[in-house]
Length: 321
Image (cartoon, rainbow, N blue to C red):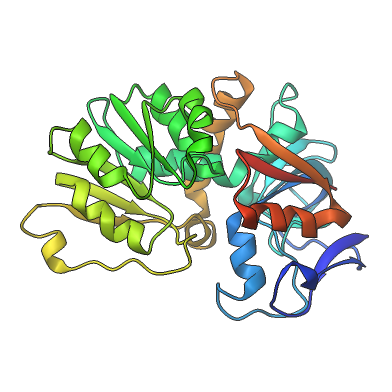
């Protein structure tokens, strides 16, 4: 079968379109014929070596949509069923293996393309909003990187939840209309969001700030986070760690919550099934959609990575396998 293999860390040129053996399944695993996989910023970080040591050769990718090809004995799945999944050894391949706990059936009415856009970003966003942030209708929230995959989904989910005021940040105001179309009330840049949030909240500050950027953005977020507010930190796409002081939290009764979908997949996979069911219902009923910025063929994965790194896109980038 064909797969994208990487034998060293580096830029997009290290990704090679290769022939590899078909993977075999073990107990409680399924083999999936991949239709589409998504490209996430985590793939870029892993390709560069920013997510720890790599065991080469490796295949990148977090999630897939596709069809069950083979099941283990006594499986709850059957050959031919349409699913989304988090494979165990990357997703940039024609066939992947996944543990059954990380495989979820999808409705026949949901196209593979739309299904592929949602596993990582939609499940993560739902958990961030409802489980970690515990957002209320009366809240004012800030969503950093609001035009990205997670940001786009968070804005829509917040709107569906009836959140009072949704403020999105972007790197370029050319994305303002896109983010407002998704449901944001106000869109501003990373340079202006502190003043904008304070103005919109009469200097009280936001109740919840969702931060996947880190670096200075995390630090600046405390300048406009209200009393008893929560900073939900779930990534560092900016490439630099954010810094906090104890004085940022104790006297203001504010708090910081961290979350990683990768850690949850590894250590608490049972938490994902109820959330997957809810977001799949939202996608199937078209209450929630993710615009697809562009679809690349598997052999053009280098171009997909370059587009992600340019940040010159809106929505999700997919790979057709």
